[in-house]
Structure formats: C-alpha cells, structure tokens
Length: 218
Image (cartoon, rainbow, N blue to C red; front, side, top):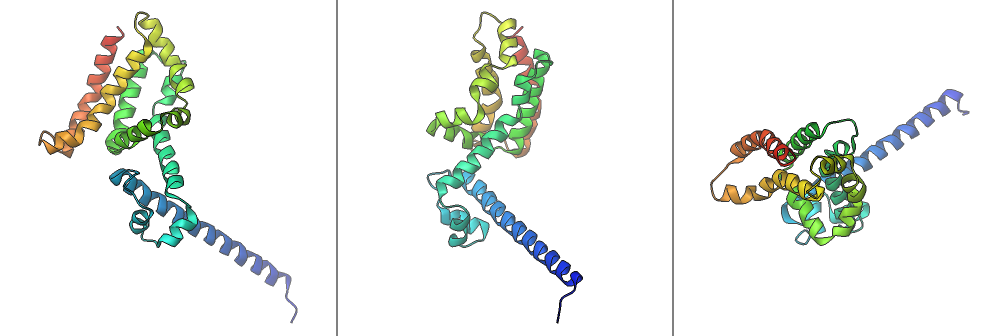
C-alpha cells in the first residue's frame, strides 16, 4: 500500500520527537552525574573521591558514568570551572563597571559575595583547595589579570589611597568576606555557632565589612 503525504509527515514528526526525547534523556543523565559529582567532590575532596562514589550518588552504574565522562579528572575540571565562575561571576561586573562609585562598589561586592557564600558554604574550601593545587589554571580561568588587577575598581582604589597597594586592599576585603566561611566548621565544632546563628552573623557582616572597608579607603 502506498503511503500518503500525511503518513510521511507523521513519520517525520515521530522521528523528531524521538530525537528530542533522547537528547533530553542524555542531558538529564549528564546533569544527574554532574550534580552527584558536585556533592561528592565538596564532601570528600578530589583525592578521596572515586568515580564509583559519584555513580552511587547519581544512582547510576559505573559503566554509564564512564560513557558520559571518561575520567574523574575531566569531571572534576568541569565542576571546578563551574564553581570558580560562580564564585567570581558575582563580583566581576562590579570590578569592571566604570560608572559606579567606589563606596557603592564596596557595598555591592560585600552583599553579593556574602549572599552567594551563605547559599554555598562549602564553596570557599572547594575553590581554595584548587587554588593551592593548580594556581596557574585557576588564575587563567577567572582572568585575574584583566578582571581584578586591571579593573576600574583597582584604579579607583589607587586614586583614593595612593599610598597603599590596591592589592593589599583587595586582599583585606576578600579576607573579611571569605574567611568566616572557612572558619565555620571550627566554630561549629567548638559550639560557638549553629547554622541559624552563623547566617545571622553573616547578615550583620554585610554592613560591618562595608563600613570597615570604607574606613580603610577613607
């Protein structure tokens, strides 16, 4: 029996729907693996993590994980770059903005950074471990030279405080923002804070860090 034009059109639609479903399934599996990798890498660190750990976390067999990601190294590189970009994407536009005043930038950097880290408390330790192990690749990934050292923010700091190296001021700012999250596990183990108390302290710290930083560049 000869097929009508409508029959061929229907077959094309079915094939396209099947292709879309397979693409969605692939995307879902990849994202499931990546999410599992984020959890395991953050919990165990790179060295202690095995691909089998990630497969178990994702609820998949090891062969399927290896099909999508050939090595632990490649998967870690993908997750690491995501985390690095997440960490610096919050403040990079502020550093390079030529229209915003220095004091407003300090407020924006402080608020955005603390908000980001409150939602991702393991992020600083995860990124710091990679900075220690691969400083050159980290620097290239976030474009430290262009985004930070040659930024308009650095120029404003230099103009406001010509007797102080701007890098000193940036280190002071980032230290005040990041170190509490690094110290959090120790503070919790000592019974000094719980999650609710720590989040409250970080809310207060937005105003305090802005105030302290403005005093430094006054």
